[in-house]
Image 1 (cartoon, rainbow, N blue to C red):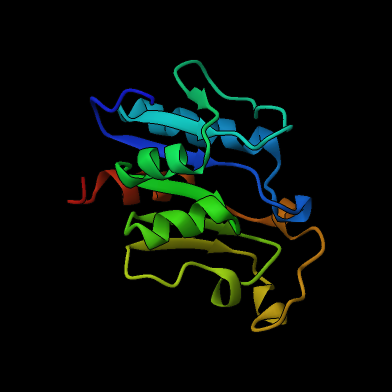
Image 2 (cartoon, rainbow, N blue to C red):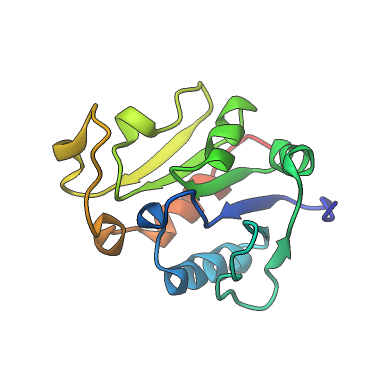
Length: 158
């Protein structure tokens, strides 16, 4: 297990479908921002997927589901896509920050009571409550790094 001696964030940059994924190079500025606030940043990989580019200080790990649940349970927040790890964090009551550019968060987003921050594509309502997705939606997704960092560092949770 990765060290948990100070607050940390888990980033899960992969999804089961590529169209749900944010461009790999866009993660690095977000990770740098989080590291700048003294948070540890753990990046969970997906099987047979290359690691995303990340600044020094970010720690990559590859865990089975039980190990992932253990590290997610102690996180200050989990940042991810429309994917299993984001829903796992929500089920465990951990703050979730979801990036939904290709699917609609009302349909596929976290449903639990944990604090949430969702970034959605400007045209997401076109696919609300359907299985449709927005082609190229993740490429256009506008994410405010500072807003994410503030949501994580300005919380009383963990």
